[in-house]
Image 1: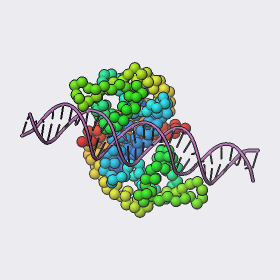
Image 2: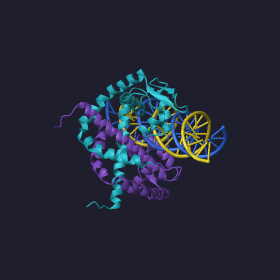
Image 3: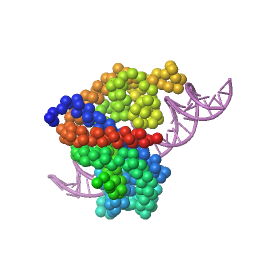
Image 4: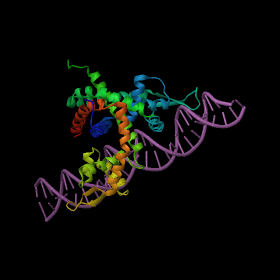
Length: 152
Length: 152
DNA sequence: CTCCTATGGTTTGATGTCGAACTATTTAAT
DNA sequence: ATTAAATAGTTCGACATCAAACCATAGGAG
């Protein structure tokens, strides 16, 4: 029963990755259209991390938390810091490292983003319902986790 | 039973979009690491379209087929054409339009990409199995379709 | 102690992507 | 027929992202 034509397996993977790509595209641009001028999903994600977990983190820890390269994190932090949304200080205990923390302005920006996001989420829930999301979450989490573990 | 705390609904959506974003990220970079030098997922997707469906298409049709802007399609076509993988000619019946078609070199490149992709797909199937993909496909397709219909 | 490797960050160059502004052509409206 | 609105493509500027190359510091092997 679990035996399958290899071609159809490949096709299944293709289709899933294709849907995933399109959804990622559509959702991130929908997000960014309602966000304050200049705020991107990548930047919001950093603020969200600090609002939920607090504390100070090294850029490389943020990079692995979000599955991006250190170069990408450098770039995003270099956009957040001039706006005063995060502050970055040298790590006393490690001459190479730096430590990032959110500022009050960053918290205010995050709150504003959440406020603007609410109507969009309501709209999506009204149009699609929670069913498909509930059904997709567990398999997606498994795919993500194993895919992540494979990148070695 | 279907009644839910609105906060948990928002959280569900957040999580699904988050998983989707990470999977899109990981899968596309995994794809591009095994592809021939200079080939990207975006470019492969165009070649794949023509190999499967044949014919000639206008850039704007390709753009809507792949849910990207015309500007994005212009950019991708401007990378494929100099490499000789597609050819672009004026549309006789419409002075504004242009028509894109794949070339023999494009077909050869596509075949090479498929050949290189096979081991990666095998690896993914071996590590994850088809189960989570089969489970995710239908809900993802529904989310994608309705999200797509909302962008108006 | 000295050297070699590992780790943290940055820079550079390339690609994909968007939105906005622009040109050219087509179609519809009056 | 003239004009206004829609459509096809392009260009530009910004951002996210990666890989590769690079600098600095830390840690371990002898």
